[in-house]
Image 1 (cartoon, rainbow, N blue to C red):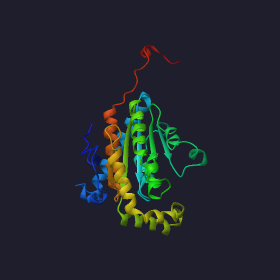
Image 2: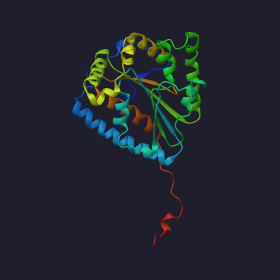
Image 3: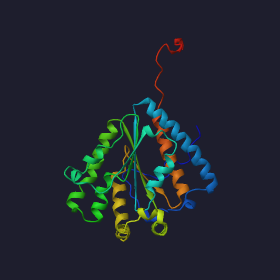
Length: 273
């Protein structure tokens, strides 16, 4: 296997603090090669990801949960589409968490999340997640601080439960600049085939950019743990984002080291007529 350069380059160490304004969102500040080199590396990583995922599915014992968070237009959808292209769709489940339904609101806020965690042999991908309940809920004042502030510990304990019962957890924040977000939102307005992705509410969220950064920084400080770490991945350049995310996933799957189950005894004696 080829080594992965700096697999923990964007890891948020437990009990550390992060200032998003101090982390460049540009590929050039983190990657010494050009886009062509990155595309070749990404192609190789995606091939290995598919191979490792196939083994994970065949083995049927381990589980991997990938949490993706970002501000609006941060690239969650395209990351899933690009990075997981070519994997066995039977072995990957994607859950997208929108505003909670009436039924979901009738339960505790983790109820709808637990239903979607991966089962043995599966990779689960969360497009947004339980972290919305300490992000948008906080910034938009959907709940008082006395309520949402307790959720950091709830979330840590929930993720510890998953980890203790055999789920590997990787959490990735796709870090884009305000200028890049503006370009992506404008592109949705300009292209009739992408108008469906634009919502006027996105502008209200954009107006609270700084508040969201503060909320995310709290998430990283309080919820990046040894068993469920956060990574802050520069994502202005989509080609570099794809490489960086793939490195993290492949490195984790290599460490999990899934194996094909042993074959049934006596197969060498079977003749199919």
